[in-house]
Length: 514
Image: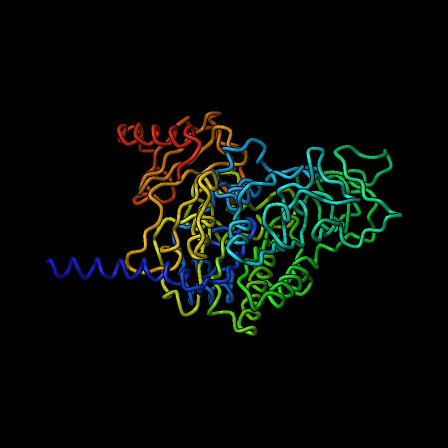
């Protein structure tokens, strides 16, 4: 008995030592975070999808760890991205709901982020893809001048961005502090109101659209698609939706080439599979699930291209790759792209209820894969891990420490990310909807508490995109027995419910959990 105990303890110490010794010896891993947009737990074949095949992501999973309990911290994009970068729950920071086109920078200069923490540890840092965390000072972006503060003021050395999200204007790239290819004689204007009665929009010019809208998304038209918000000018700077993924790969490859000889952190922030779903023509029509399925295949291609580049540069055994999503799935999110009509037997959220906008498991439990060839033993893990833990975990792997006042909710899960028989994930996790306005999910072990101050739940039935469902203020679910959260057992386990209510309230009011 004693021998077994000491052997177990020795193995545990070896597992812990392997993480810290790598960092201490200067063998820090490069880090590439690949974040999908609106990708559901059931959208990948390595997570059980049978209506679509994602071979590149499947390979990533087969060479690393596929987490069955991987989470983002919020069920919409802006708050998840905020919490991922800062390591602090977004509900602690007012104004972190879905950012409008002219939103100023949400993460203020001086805020510690994953990028600044790794930069201080000697890493080159870059972000490519969707930003959607605001740009500029209190008045918002100066689209014709310097777009700062932005990523470069919070730890990134370089950025190549879609500034908002592509169903919101403007359709331009931002490189570092400037709109790319902007002609000064054709200034860019972005606003909330139509600039003139003659300005083409998705209502007055609906018959000209190549992708029709179902709700909202009917303001300025660009590339045959109407968007949220209005803009004029900047014609030479505007991109074509179909070219986004190719551009992200081009710029990511440039970053990897440039920094191949030094530690680096790349945040690859895909726009796929967010609306408007308009993948490159070579992907259109090749899935059986309409444009949404085609966009999943385009995202899978992006993952494959990044893996090819790491292999070509002999970086696969020096790089930790983490694949995740910013929230769960949604089918009809504003455009008539046949996502519902062609869903068939496919279940975007896998076995879970809910999706984007929801604190049911389908809203925040998403694909989550880690790979570091030669370091991670391939397998499947049931550890609870979350994107909010990147700050503390990557700091540990880089051999640097978190400042006391930074990353208030980020836990060091580096052992779990790297696997091993004694790797431990989180004990508990707070989940929120878009604005964190009294709608929370709180998972503690096998138990999940729902709290709805407004007594309404969004997007519970993803396959029909049901908007709002009346619910009690509190519900309790046993995820071990009922992963689909169908049976509210709050009356059977009142003591468990009260304990979780107290813990959730404490986590919210204390201002930090780390």
